[in-house]
Length: 378
Image 1 (cartoon, rainbow, N blue to C red):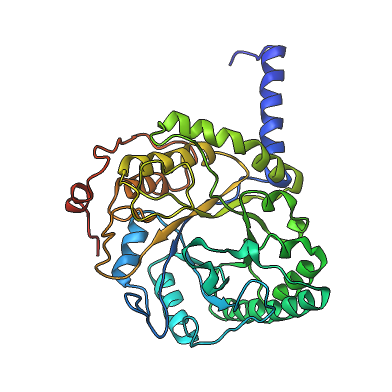
Image 2: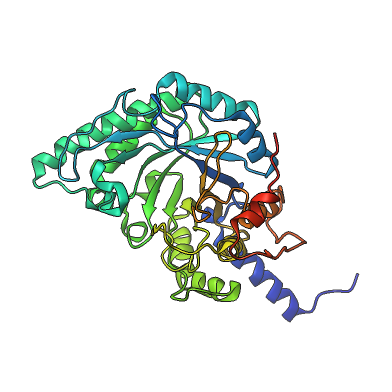
């Protein structure tokens, strides 16, 4: 074997040190969570909403390479300025149904993230969101945190009893997370009841940078609805360039805290301009299957090999029988080219490098073209 020259050895040493330092705490990269959120299912069911997950859809997710399924039970807040938080089986999935769903997911060999969420009628149709939750006085905040603690610890106890593998203590509450000590108390109470890893799903726009209690959690969670472009027909290269705008802040936070980053939500509708404002919903938006698929590809190309990246949960999969995206422009990848992009990366088990084959979607706008070729794996 030829000896290494001093200059070459130094370069290799620096590369090794750099890779080590980029890992949270200098540790090996975390196992990738190949996740997807499932929605929605209620007990009692509303119109079009079943009470349990379909086993056939769960088997399909497993075959697509999914390792983690995210379940979202809800509590209800009358309006964003009210400290009242209501929980109960008449408002969300019952314990019996939740246990059945978790058991079915485990039975096909996948793991579960439980991500309890606050909801309000005022959040429907984008009128308001969790960022609008704000109390009007110190006393109201104290009451709100007392009620929130009761809500989140109730589900922490359920997560422990059901053997759930990862638990979220909250998401997208940027005004509430300014109260650092209150959140540290919440996390401490959760850890008394649940002994698995914890995450909080921070809003992409600023909350993930301003949270000061990441050290108390196991993951930095980000609901990664970052805008990537201002164009309606951005290329894959332009979408990847859009991610480079956000990448330094995410990487720096991982390095600073020593915590791996987990995208607790990320998703794109199958519409023209999917990368512009991924969170927006307009039924009239024109279908563009390629745009969605290329947004998926840009996420994987940008983050899959980052040593501090712990995985992601796509928004979302309707895991009940005979689902069809009638408008063709939902966030779901089901039966669309994006499904195959996800599967190609997720099936590269244990591999962080890019999969060897890279497919190109052939149809931009025809729902019938992708639905006709959909593989119904049961």
